[in-house]
Image (cartoon, helix red, strand yellow):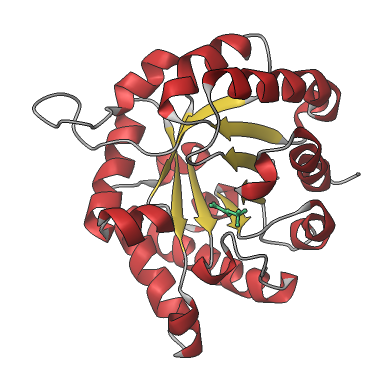
Length: 257
Ligand code: PEP
């Protein structure tokens, strides 16, 4: 019942010209792959490329996403971007609480909750990232960390938001490292996340919310990961920077490569 959702997080990569070249290729090649709505696809370019990318994708099914947003709508917040500004340039979704923002920019669980609330209020869908570090996994605290991240992200979410709220489980030790959680390891955490979603939002919402996996997803591991019962797509970093790699992952998520 859940439509898989694959999003490419471009991070700090690509000029406007490079962004347009990539989305033009994606648009042309994904028209057939994504037809029939058996998979949803998004790209999250850097802020500077959002407007031209959104214009180029005007007539395409690929959705444009922000990589972050702030929780206030306006005011003296130098450097920040409001959720409604993302809507204004054509974004439909925004990634919130990515581990790189938690690690390098002081993102807190409470801040993630406020950003999710502001994004949903502005009409955006929110992709909230959760996941443990290597040391936390070794210490046996994976579920405790995921629970804490989830609690922050869900602070202001209700069952009515289920269609516009996505959780991305991204073990930090797998991001950009080439190490991927095994399908069984990922599925175990995804099932746990769905159980927690049920406790907080009810069974119906928990069954509807998509849970993406992220962490070195590539064409060669995507089929096995996407085959797991509670994995509903992927948040893809490195492999989203080349059209062929990203399209192979979209095909895997769609179910018949
Ligand atoms: C990410 O940054 O969200 C990510 C999953 O990166 P990568 O695919 O490169 O591990």
